[in-house]
Length: 235
Image: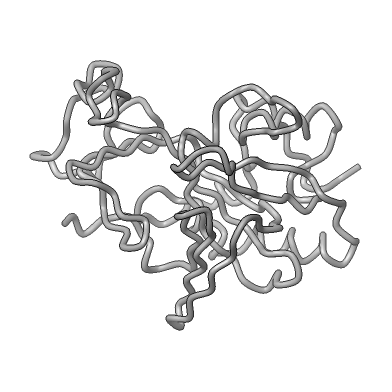
């Protein structure tokens, strides 16, 4: 395993499995929440790609075989003998049918730094799969990108609202929908903004172990392609 493997053990985590959110703290304490979870999104990484030669176990996270923090080229931290291609677009793991399920073996994902409603003193990292990112809104059910566009349309930054994450009960694999529940109170918003600038939030949004750049701390939680513009909670 590379010494620059994903920093899952270095941050508080929320993993997905069996229609439940599994909260793992540094202290070793584990909580399980079924169905839905009310959160505040304070930071996010760009879309990434990950390829696991062996099946990924969300309950025992480990470094993938190959990964890309920008969906264009493998990370510089990927060992040379594990890189699947020089460019993601040319990679055999990016071909439909390369996975056992018929899709692409190299999958999109995105890491978010979030707070829990009523427990805003703790930053968690959550990794959402492609099924929770893409797709059009339907019957009020929104994936991450559709939700970001919805917030943008209403001129609302993600950090200013409580976002409910809930599982799609119609699928066996983890798939989340996102919904704005309420606006944060002023005191809550100030805590969220402070947490956004914290080292914990920056680390939680990283794809690999690395020292976050100072200019990355105040970036928007979503990339331009998501259709969301972050205004730091200003009106």
